[in-house]
Length: 261
Image (cartoon, rainbow, N blue to C red; front, side, top):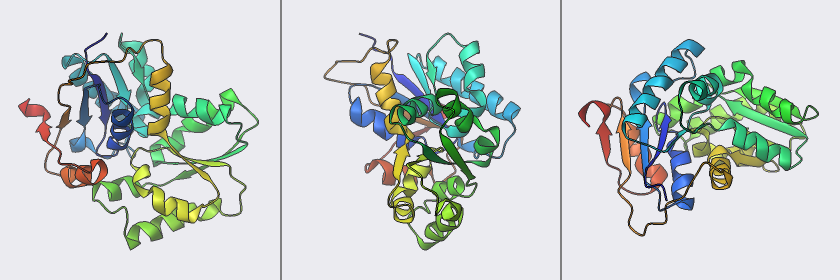
């Protein structure tokens, strides 16, 4: 039994949607979460910058003696995952491959992807999907405003409804089987997205990551009855993270500064 914690990082609060899914399915696991809030958003940065920022996040989590690292960020997954896997001798997984495995096994023929500008322009989702099944049609849409709005807690108001309606308008009329939420902030808009696309399966990448971990040979679950308290670190605590985190997790959240650990 491996008593080490799971490490997880995102550019901000969005990765808590992955944290929540992992915690619900694996309550005996301690999780150390890092939100790189001082460098948010990642979606508008260059690939080189994202790799460097991701390396710093990984180094911090390694200093906490984690047994594996989940990149709970679509942009960092698309831009930095392969480089990080080459650099570090520890299991590192992102949100793309587990989700691609799911959609191809389900036999979907037409899939939409919404993500940050950087992720969509990297074409990572479409490349990975077509590697598995070249016959799948992929419709991409960048949604650069959604992650910043989520960090402000604007996920269930009229502004969110109008912005999502504008972003998803080109999907209307397409016979899509599923829509991948390619940024971990986007599950916070799931109710509004379902209203816009009522007949389309909405895919939360956090759920797919949990399934992948449970099936992985490298992962050994904890079976302890008592688990150490999770730790949530931020690179900048002067943000709206705490309020949004409480709304996501439905409980009080204690946050720590990465510089005061």
